[in-house]
Amino acid sequence: MKTALLSLALATSLTTSALAQDVVQQTSLGTPLAVELAQAAVAACSADGYNVAAAVTDRFGGLLALVRSDNAGAHTANASTAKAFTSASSRTPTSAMAENVAKNAGAAGLVDIPGFLVLAGGVPVKAGRATVGAIGVAGAPGGHLDETCANKAVEKLSSRLK
Image (cartoon, rainbow, N blue to C red; front, side, top):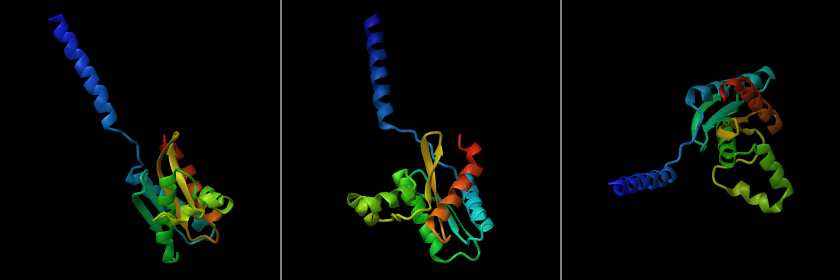
């Protein structure tokens, strides 16, 4: 009887650890916070006189929110979405990727990845050390200004990213 119970316990233990490897839990940004991040980024750029669009994705690059200021160019919606997708996919600010492409011929192929836009303005959104999403901003007169607005939005709502 003891042997049967021990065998059952061991089999259950092995099955549980095997299943744990088959199912992965991951944390991702929720839609309500994504909308607020996009609004905060547009507001930050508007305060500086820039008409932009801001897109926020989940950790996998799926679009959660898109906000475009009234006078932003039509292209800004697609550009901000592509910047957010690029940052989410790479878990890296797009400015760092653009710099890497400019300095490293081996990285030049990054611009050919479908959906990627390797221009400054996309930043990962992190909860602790985990990337839970990304924000992309487009429309300011320079990617560094887009990135500043994205970072201001993340900073403003950072207390909710714990």
